[in-house]
Length: 66
Image (tube, rainbow, N blue to C red; front, side):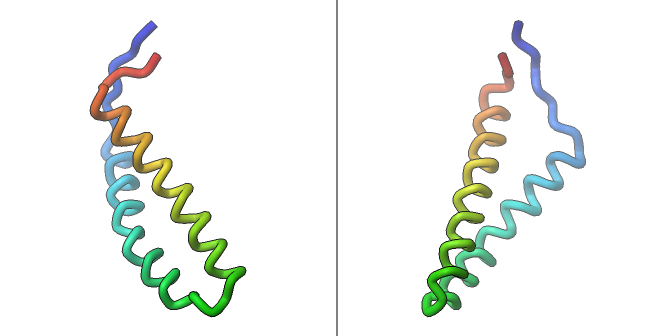
């Protein structure tokens, strides 16, 4: 069964907020080059955020969810 997806205004706002966080993560990573543990956490957070943002974009582009 396929269902058409229409994100709520809250979901759209959350996506935009998360997307705007990405430059901050890159700045933090750049500032944390000397701290391997902090850099690893920042890069892991960036990977998770990127995965979520890409999943949202894919769902919205297809407009369908199985």
